[in-house]
Amino acid sequence: MATSHVSETDRLLSEVLEKASIKNVLDLGAGDGRYSVCCADLGAKVDAVDLNPFPEDIIDHLNIRTIMADLNKFRLPARLYNLVIMRSILHYLKPKEAESLLRRVRRHVAPGGFIYIFTTTPAGSNRYAYTPEIITKMLKPLILCRQEETSRADRTKPDGLFHSWSLLYQNVRSGSACTV
Ligand SMILES: C[S@@+](CC[C@H](N)C(=O)[O-])C[C@H]1O[C@@H](n2cnc3c(N)ncnc32)[C@H](O)[C@@H]1O
Image 1 (tube, rainbow, N blue to C red):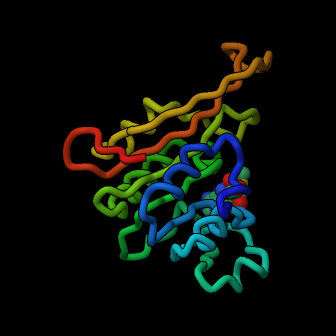
Image 2 (cartoon, protein in one colour):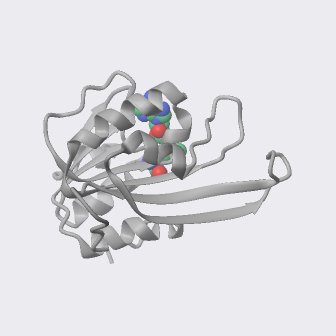
């Protein structure tokens, strides 16, 4: 299965890719591009954005357009996407940067389209924690249609727990129309 190298924590993303018709994808903070490749190998056209250079095989992939840019300054392409992936990127952005990016991104989600977010309560002074409540406020009027949380013990955290969230938002006019 083309989605087999998506991490186990990304079950919601796998489900979207398997069940929804995804033609255009925006992968923000794409890293080594593994999630872009998942989508591209399924036939989607992918815009992959990252601050750092991409590996050659990602640059050469016919279905992937690589864009080296800082998300805090990046002007989003004038198009709508069926799926925006923001995996392990939000917690690198300061609150004002995260809010600005989410408010820009939500306008680029096609009707019925999705934003997939994976974020954690990471360690380190240059990392920021975003709970589903905070993200949902920033992405309004998109609705949070699926949410999965994993927690494990971490004595360095104020509540003694390390949290990770997989969140699936959808652009719907009314109700909670999530078909995945
Ligand atoms: C932990 S990696 C996640 C990569 C990929 N999304 C994944 O889940 O495998 C975080 C990525 O965000 C990128 N990044 C961090 N801050 C960024 C910024 N301001 N603009 C663009 N990319 C950024 C880093 O270069 C890195 O590739």
